[in-house]
Length: 154
Image (tube, rainbow, N blue to C red; front, side):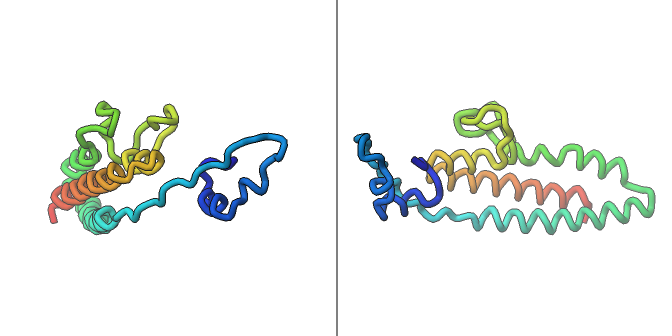
C-alpha cells in the first residue's frame, strides 16, 4: 500500500485498493486521511521579498565599500553576525535547536531538514503548528532583512 503517496485519497475514493487486493488475504483497505487545509504562506513570501530587497541594498553598499576600500571591517562584522537573526526560541519538541532555516530532522535522524519547524509540522499533519511556524520563520527572515538594511548603512 502506498501509505502517503500524493494520490492516496483518490485511490481510496476510486476503490483501487480493494480492487487490487489479493482475494486470498483478508486485509482492510486503508482509511482516507483528512483533507489538508489551506495554509497561508503569504507572510513568508512577503518576508522573502523583503530579504531580497535588503540583500540587494547590501550588495550596493558592499560594492561601494570595495571601490573605496572603506567599511570592510564594519561590513564583515555585520555579515558575521547576520545569521543570528534566524535563531528563535527553539523548534517544537527540540528547544535546543534554535535555527529556523535548517536543523537535523526530528523523525529522520541527522539528515538536514530545511525550514524544519514548518516542514515537520506538515509531515505530521499538524496544521496549527505548521501555520504558527510559518509566522515564526517569516518573523526571523524579516529580522534578517532589517538587520541587513541597518548593516548596509542605507
